Length: 141
Image (cartoon, rainbow, N blue to C red; front, side, top):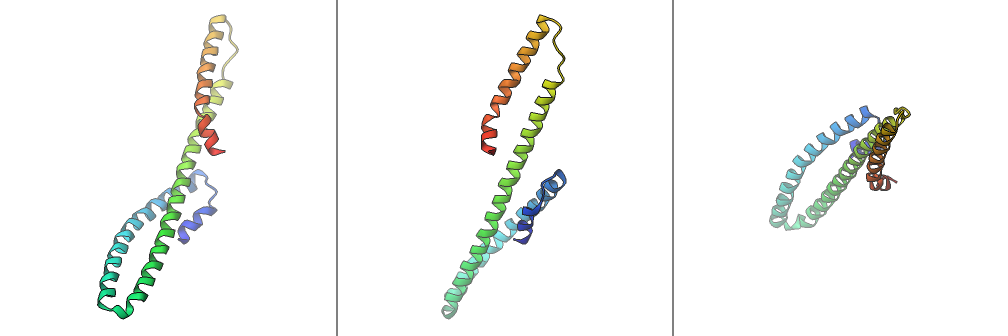
């Protein structure tokens, strides 16, 4: 959990995002292995509780506590994964917006009516593309 909690402190520049992605991928692999072990422990705890009824309550309490920690851990990982997905989406959005801005500002003034109509057509296409990002922008705000 400590490793996941430390990801809150990252500033999320590209280097830290890459580090976070590697860490989360590693954690996801470890969690898959832990899930298998947790399932095996649950079966074993049921068997032990059946054979040692005097310890059944203690075994059940520990199993419940272990399951609670497991659920916390997986929830934290899911939150980090959602955050990572949102950040990739935001990076894509910012890159696209930057490209559109660059395309618009790098155009020269038209020297003929045909060129002006071409610019107008291009600007209308860009406007449509910007409008397609309305939902994305609303989601981020």
